[in-house]
Length: 231
Image (spheres, rainbow, N blue to C red):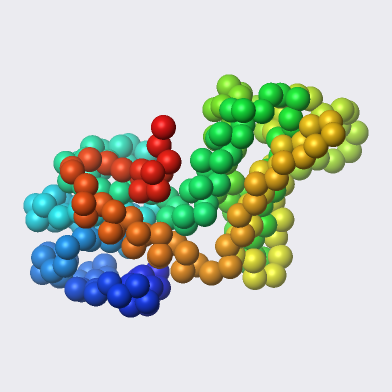
């Protein structure tokens, strides 16, 4: 991801002041440049964050894998500087989250909701993190619990109920990531789809976040803020 960030920054004409890895002299490197971008490892986030706070520099965090309590503690610290923290920096995916929320809110339970995701044959988990977030949004808007989820269907399942939400994970080839949210009613169907063809989309989104957060006051933000999608 570091190499991808550097390559995308060059495409956009953004100079990289320092490229650092876990184990490097972070403080010396982080003194350089205007914004810090962290896509390292969850055990390094606290050190990066503390340096950013001491240097009073804006920070973009894309690292995942933190335990819930640890993440909550670090997010409180991050709020003391301008900080964007998100698990997915794809502009298109974040717009899909927003569109899914609005569509779920607008459509009644007459519209059955199904989520379909596809990834490469090497992916070890299912459903994907992006699909899981889409499901969270749908459940929140329809005031349902995870008991409503149907992970595929087999056998004599009976008619589909109005309260269930289907999730289907496909695996094959070298697919970077496809996600579709399908709303199906009697007589019409609405599909919201995002297809990722290059992992550089995450780097470009993080760089967009870095440019945006450099102009913001102290506070904790996410990509919805960066894209101006918050209500």
